[in-house]
Image 1 (cartoon, rainbow, N blue to C red):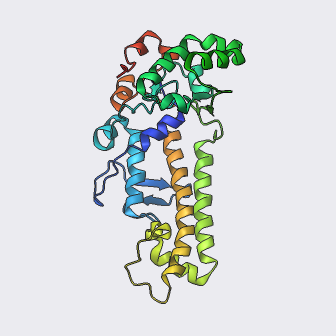
Image 2: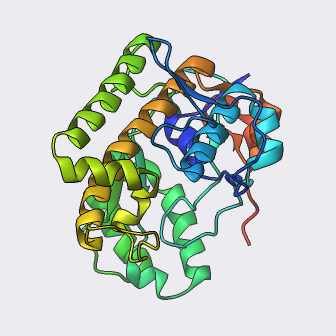
Image 3: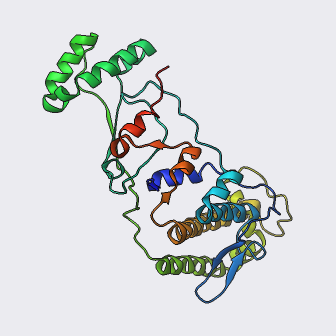
Length: 297
């Protein structure tokens, strides 16, 4: 078994081809069952458009039966192009054999190659990368001496270099340790808040009832093609923007519920992850990862 970070899990779910057929047959059509027994499903979508229903059910299928979902919905992560912008070129996402691997929990540093080096082309970038790696110990111990040596080696006049720091998401999202019960309660609260907000004003209520499945049009330039009655398009879209924002919050909570219920540790078969386009982590898998390092082109 292998682990991936929350960020890479979200990356996987962005690569789904959501079925565009309204009548696509999912194994499980239940979107959510509330604590009081009310069921939101594909036949009774409540507030969700058919696209939102298919998006949620695709995500749920992935969490419940990853192998099946990959066969039906997934676009494999392609080898990323080298932008020649960073000392460490872009790589495919990694999986880990150790859920406590430091690479899953430490901050990520991306060091930019100076523009004057990049302007000299790919060969100069590769030369710069090799030089950087061979002088890494100097950079850590004597950063000023490192920059001086760099300037001497490449004829630059740098005073430093750009570093992008990104915190890693780890195997768990440490900002969200809620139980299934707590997530369910949050979903219920958000549903209730949406309906309370919609009912607070009579015209808003009527717009909500008639157009809630078209909330995506709120931020769109597309016109509303169905009969708008005595409402202006501007008035309708103002309401739909709020509706869509609130629905997106509910969708995100539902996805968290599926993840927590079916794959709480983000633990997968290594063969499956490799089929998705992942490679072994060099930190915790050592020599195995060497076999997956890309050839420099």
